[in-house]
Length: 174
View 1: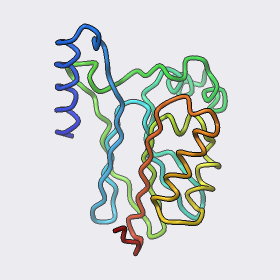
View 2: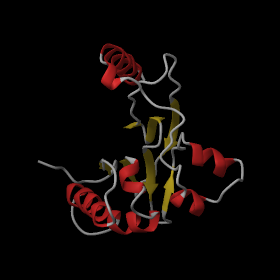
View 3: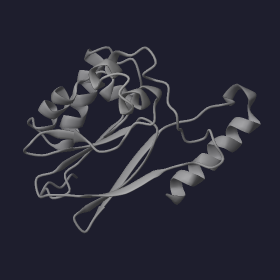
């Protein structure tokens, strides 16, 4: 939380010092695993998902105009995916002095896989496509690369960031 607040201050200061950077901001999703719980922080529309034997579920809630429309029943989740205003975020790091960060704990089970990603991934791929790749062959790095490649193959209209965590895996990368 302190790191996100510090980033907010740095971005605000930089944008105040350079007129060309005025109004810039970013999104963030972060997580750490301790005692079989995921500690999650998010601002904006970068997301955290958990995939297990049952499927994939979005844990974070987007801070966006279309998510507000979905929440209040104005449009469906499917309509939100193609809505022309889907990239308008309502909360971002670097925009406000008093940054609101969503913080929460999520219990984890033995086979859970955690995905942290930018909207560059989720804007290009359906949840089921993401799940297929997460469940596919290879180590986490290879699957992360396949997610990025699949998003690029579908148009790649935004920056794509992907982190896969397997908190209970015996896998060790070198």
